[in-house]
Length: 552
Image 1: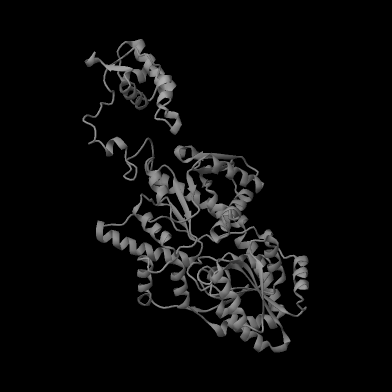
Image 2: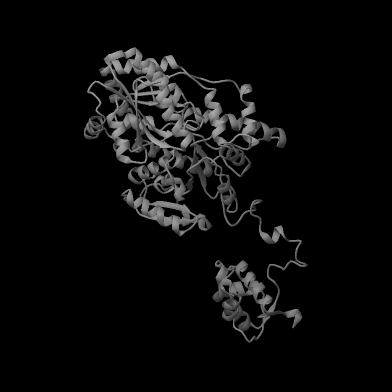
């Protein structure tokens, strides 16, 4: 039996894990890849989903079955959160889980740990989410996995600002969540080089044996991924330097976000790299993605946009045995070392130059696309270094081979889910240890300002508040049964009624048997929770099935 403290219930909604159903983006692709890796490499006795309702729970089970999970699946709904036990952690597929912290608060901050993960952190929603996280009942036994050292630094920078604000206003800031750096993973075998796919693509495109194909795998969004113009300019300059010794081709496998993006790529390629062919392949097509990675000689990922935080595509290219040319930008600084590729310098401005951009985005003068586009425009990608990277690799087949082999070895040793999943499980165990070290316990319901008990919040509304035992009551004879009244009132039409009719009937019958009784006496006799009995008493009084003894 494995340690359940090193397992986590997976907060599951289709939006977080199904790119086929909800649309391809990095967050969903990473979510689906994680589940596949967890299904195959999780050292657990069971897989547990944590979801809103049965539909999502069923989808989780079907997904894990599709990934050939060898252990049983169990579902827990939000309203039964304590039933994740013996597991002690909920894994959330994003960094901004403040709403889940407030949900947990009703059960007590020590009910379980929450573990999120960074993806894009530049949107106003995610930036506000971090502020909300620090203002929520977040504890030191919670965590936000940072996928790169660069994104951790950015999260810490925002937390520093929040801590300074809270200290100035309240005198202190709460403990921060754990923030380990654990990279995204992949199932490396899914990206293995295919000689057949390579031959088919190159034959179809009539590319020569010595032609050099440079490829990228990305959403083709100039305002949300990377500006292609520096890449096009560098490829054209590289072709000029290579002359007739090597013919360059560029393949973009991806999805245009809109007509604007298509025009930028198509018109830009035609205008800026007339000597280099441009081929578009469908990024939604698995065969096209395989053909891209197998048919290419060099992979490039020249990111200059703050939307990126890690960069999964270069790891996929490494798993396919390709050398990588990328920018020296956030996550690529961790993943692409000198053995597997070339990182090109990037340069940006200081804070004083972009404070206006922050204000424009906050005040809705600019939207997210404009915000990212403007900051990309203010990021220099070293054109000379980018050009020379392509020239160097185009001229040196042995170097391409060595880097490709090193990249494959690095992908397998560092980024395959078989290596990453154990790091997640170790973290989940550490979160449980922190909770236990703090002597944290959680029972019953806890005060929660985001979800106060309604009769506490609205205590000033009725003219009187009933006592806990309601007071002695006597059963009354009526012409309509409890079941008939329940049906007539159509409580079940709205679903989730305040109590079940058979519970009401049991309480009524016990009072009728006793003659006169209060809620405490009935609860003891029936072995019912006294709160349930008091709720039943109130309804039975409301509809005349009970009468107070002092009114008899």
